[in-house]
Length: 146
Image 1 (cartoon, rainbow, N blue to C red):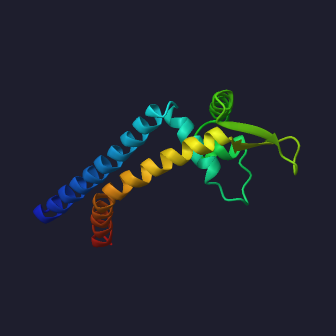
Image 2 (image 1 turned 180 degrees about the vertical axis):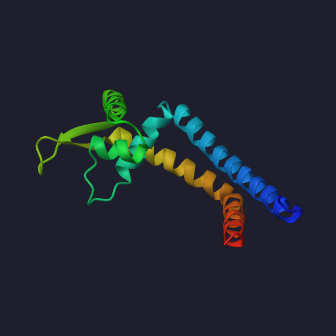
């Protein structure tokens, strides 16, 4: 049987996790709405962010995009196709391996991503204290259990 102290600690952990999930979801909802207001789908925003933010040592192939977005390869292909059709990205032949295509942002994609990045940075600045507080509470719970 569990003690009252253990039950209270478990309840505090669940409250902490619920609060963290709420703050995180609030930011994700902001991000999704910002993308829609900019005229693109949230996944297209995430695609552009991963392409622009990729380590230069990594080739930004469809496989890379699929991995970074947690998508199946065929879903990533469809996302790149839609985004290419809308002028947000282009595919270029990989000079190191002609069987692969490298995904790059277009100027239109860069401008749109710059605007969204600024909006997201401002929102995160507002939310930073709540996110940090919740992460600290999660960390404290984790270290208490060790």
